[in-house]
Image 1 (cartoon, each protein chain N blue to C red):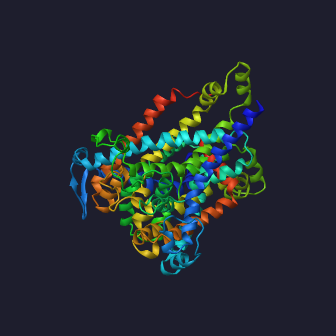
Image 2: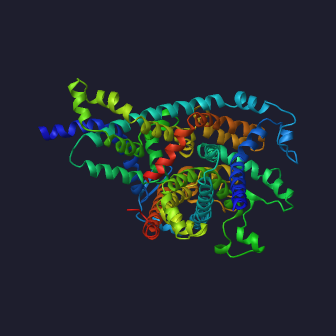
Image 3: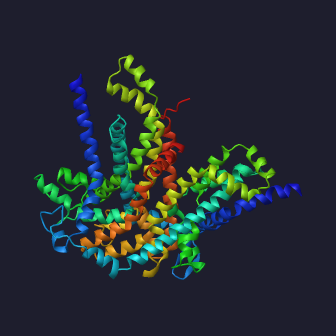
Length: 275
Length: 313
């Protein structure tokens, strides 16, 4: 019995560790290649640790291509989209959970139905709309349409509904108005939900590809993913530079992930349970 | 007066979100529907043409090819992702040391951008210098053409040319499916782990007392009680798979969708027609057919699979 237990433990650990190595392998390969010379990168058999360690690929990506600019554009988009989503969702969720008005539930259900429509279904007319507004190649096109998020409204509403109603009366007696109540009293109480929607939004904006690819024409307005994609087409065989560029593109989120790993994983896990 | 006031204040709170949703969601969806009945190209609308876009679409071999590729892709990617993630999650649930560490590692690809991931994997799949073919030769196997292989996997297995419908997805498409399983695995593992943690130990103990072996416990306790989670994961993974786009743009071709159009998927075709070629009417018709298809699949999964879902009361 004991032997059988140890054996099954060994098998389980072997599978789990090999799976983890499989998950890490592409990242290790990316990092390894990014520090190689072009000649060593295409050498067979490949080396895992560069024999000739060089930062040339990073220097090239950083100075010759507009990577700092791409990072800046992506940061602006991420920050402003996040602010927009948090603000619009807080206000809307507040209306849905603290006011009683006729048609409230119908409106809410219609929003949920709207949420089910996948982006590709309306991406072309949205493009035409943005073109008509003269927003192509501007931050407006990249930020404004995504400053609202139905899932975020839904999640914040769920959390707000669990707050006891007497809290409002107490706040009013203390001379606190509706907005003061929302931002000074409710907001701290639903902080975990706000963190969750922020995480989803930061990851979503940073990694967005199809929409920015469509609405951006000039090099200087490219967010990091689009810049990286065009770079990969232009330099399709300069592997160290491609890997260095990919590494730079994922690094901000990887750092964020290691800082807030617990919250991030928990947010995704909970989003699944809600269904 | 009081009735009006009851609306004005909530409406003020709702207005930023509602305004954005009406302008950037509701209107484009409605507009898409109208556009799909028009001959809309460079220079704007040339008028309503009724159902002609849809008629052309049904006669368009490239559309059907992309449609068939998309279905083939989902048939490979969805079950593979679910089986692998469920398997790993159930092992992780056995009280391993350093569970958090494994979970973190498995989750890392989830937050990584599809663009970077596609570039890294394309390099690993490179037929001449890629690391995968290096591994294959180390194992004494023939190197593969991976993303450049138009032949179907069933053709590759039996070693001769087969009729179109039974070729199976091209190895190029399967290569992308493997990558997306790698990328989405961490997310599904985390969801499955949460589901597994929700199954109370008493059920396992009761089954044990009744003399159920490990396999019977999986079949009669774990799988039925986990079925709501599995159901959710199946629907989400299917919807995501049907919308695959970035890897096609980045990893296949040139031109993307190659070799021989064997990796062209519906959303890529939509992008190509509606955006690159600016055939807006035709593109939106593709969008609507695609939407109906997703809807049909989801309803099918809801009605057929949900019967098998065991909800605890």
